[in-house]
Length: 140
Image (cartoon, rainbow, N blue to C red):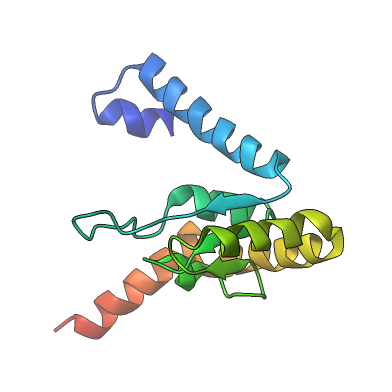
């Protein structure tokens, strides 16, 4: 990975710092009981597509409570591998977090399903396979 970053003109120190930051994010997600991703549309209507941290948390088996906006519902199926709440609904977010924090068996069930879904649908090989399929369909 560092060689790839060097090819982009980054120093080895920059590459190592970025790699360490990525590993740190994954470690924080793995250490958490639950992760909240309360994404919202801003005043201009912009929203995160699918925040990487949500995928990183799901990949570690940490259940995610997220807003039902952007690409989050593509990664999280409510009640199966995480919980989705309406955008800007603080009581719903708090309630979903409380549910997961007080029920370890639900956390474990959702976390296991989250890890499997991310591996199946969002790994590099899965995404590359879908892109290759698109190229195959549009190739003349």
